[in-house]
Image (cartoon, rainbow, N blue to C red; front, side):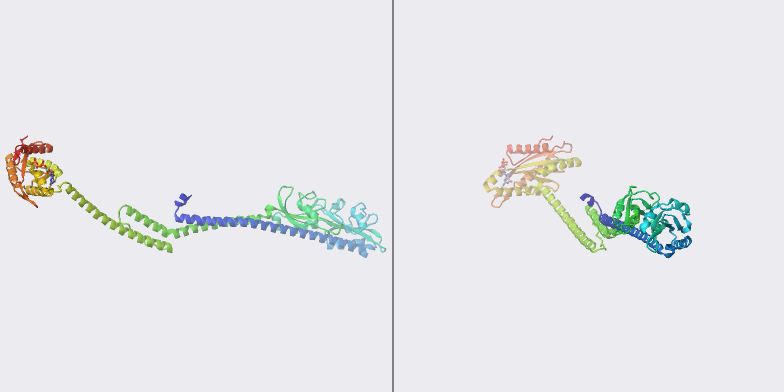
Length: 564
Ligand SMILES: Nc1nc2c(ncn2[C@@H]2O[C@H](COP(=O)(O)OP(=O)(O)OP(=O)(O)O)[C@@H](O)[C@H]2O)c(=O)[nH]1
């Protein structure tokens, strides 16, 4: 995880952070909207359906009450109670029908159930004594439940829906209060259908709202075509039948979820009143369609908003991190130059936010100071290297010098002998190696001390060096042994002559610190001619043998080694 974030640029991190925050905010908002909008929409839909149910119930109650009232009024009218003939009664009945055309039929019977007068003369003369409205009407004003009427239906004009009626009937009494017949009023169910259609506004119909009026036995009197005059059962129906009102969500037998508002008509205190359940239902899907649409719209707008914010976040992140990106590039360039041993380019002054300005300024100072240090270090390094080279050269020189006399030592001699031999070949002149060993040096050491011995060695060496040409070489091999290399000689005799001169020179008295001494020297000479095979060890050995030969034969003399 760390390595993942470690690979991201600051701008990417900022973009990610802002996008994540936006996405989270939008998601939370959607969840909340989804929750509250859904609940709110469901509550509102249920309330609406409940109100519709109440409106329908109240209308039903009002019309039934009106019919009962009209029936009562008619039974008390003198034109009905004391009618001279059927025409007089009929005029009254038809006059009432005109005020309320939904009274499909109004008629008066005698006590035997024979219709004496009726609207439109329908059923006049017919016997209706078997009809429930006649029998109940004899006992008092009473409304009977929804029912078909086969005879009447044949006489009435045809209409789209079948004729159904609610009957209201009551006794017609004479002056003594004795029944003389029954007044029957058939209220067409069409008014209920029409009223339901009126209540369901086009918008509600479009969203599938349905009004159901259900008889106490569960038979649908008004509702969708497929349900009319069929029995149904639902929780809302049972609640309405218990006299409750409200709204709920329930699953109907068709397997779909509905929101249903319910109420019941009639008067709880009047056992004779008509008890119809009024249900107004709407599928949950249609009822909440508005909320779903709102959610989808919000989702769309939220997505657009999130995209716009993400875009803004990218731009903002780039804008904010640009100074840091510039600083990073400058640091990388400086680092690359430093690694390549070049002068680091200066860090530019970066404008932008405060931290970037401070950081760039500090980095600028840092790189400048680093550059100064680097230059100082380079200079120091140069001086050190020069000092080391000088010291090395000194050490090198010391390695080739004899500490006591300052003359070239054995090593220097061995290095220069091959050069001397090759020069001899080049110039075609022999060169000679003189091997000198002091005679009786030990006695000086023993007699006057080592310091005096050292002094003698120094002076001996100086005399040798002063006695040869600049191109010749004097070296101290070890102890009291010295070597002189003579070049550009004519022949062996030349070398011998020079050796004698040198012997004379070195045997002169030496003034030391505490004493003056004389010393002899044995000199062995070995020549190297231009044509000789170059052999350093052999050349030295020959001179050494010649010197020893002198030692053996009396010292303080010169001997020339035999030619090769
Ligand atoms: N003072 C001093 N003495 C040295 C040094 N190196 C060698 N010696 C001494 O030099 C002497 C050389 O010995 P020898 O060559 O046998 O002495 P010598 O008396 O010259 O003998 P011959 O060559 O046979 O005449 C030794 O006593 C060494 O201790 C030195 O650097 N300083």
